[in-house]
Amino acid sequence: MTPKLDFELQLVQLAEQLKTQVSTEDGQWTIKGFVDIFSNVYTISSDTKVLSKILEIHLLPQIMGFAQMHGYKVILADHQNYYPDISFVSSEDESIKFAVDFKTTYRNAQKPHLCNGFTLGSHGKYFQDRTSRKNIQFPYNSYSGHFCLGIIYDRGEEASRDGTSIHKLEELKSITSVVKNLHFFVAEKWKIASDKSGSGNTANIGSIHSIDDITHGRGMFSKLGEAWFDDYWMNYGNILIKTSAGVGKKITSLEEFVKYRNGDASRIVGRNTNGMVDA
Image 1 (cartoon, one colour):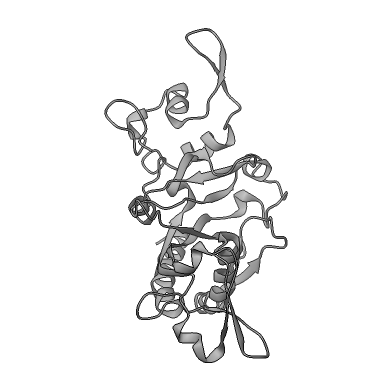
Image 2 (image 1 turned 45 degrees about the vertical axis):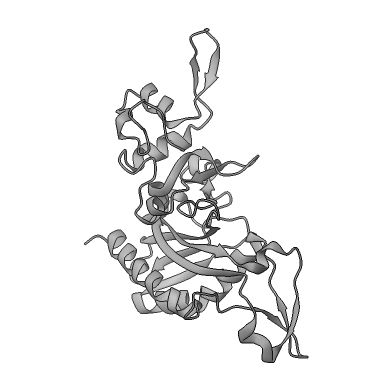
């Protein structure tokens, strides 16, 4: 077994354990809010950035224990905008490193088989230049694998409120959690990537949205392979092709890119029989 596969299996086992440690029997998140010295409980905002950070803090002790058990040193990102969130470095061989990013997103209330999606890191400087240290803890090519440790959840009743409410500490168990039904997953990021940017003006790789495909690693590149993922995103928006009208057009879809590279477009996951890529 390779160190990469060994690490992935260990991470999957961790993900299976985490749910029982952060959820109540009825599926609610065990975190209810913040407590002050006067025993007031301030409930949490439903803002996804706030939730993501609190979940990360909540899980960190388990992450540290996991690393110690399996012989890894944990190196947290030096800066907030650095990739990845955590670098796991083998205590026996420091050349073996794994990048792990925390990812959280919520289920679509109208289409519960879909989630809101998330970003999978930048396709900018450090992704294109695999020896760069810009906004990355270690050079991209020094990592033996790039993984997501993710959580998909339902937004609770409190999520519709803009602010927070205040409760007394003795009311703790009766407070409705801001999120519930947490589902943990582990995936290599290339296996759950889409061919679209994950955010407006920043150079971020977007994820797919099907929950079943995310949990089973069936992203658009999953049958093509990681080399296609790297090639596509290293060149995203930088290759011009001529349209039938003779006008230059940037390649921003995997279908166009695979055909440009003379590859087999039928291996794009989500591509239907009409040659289109399903949303």
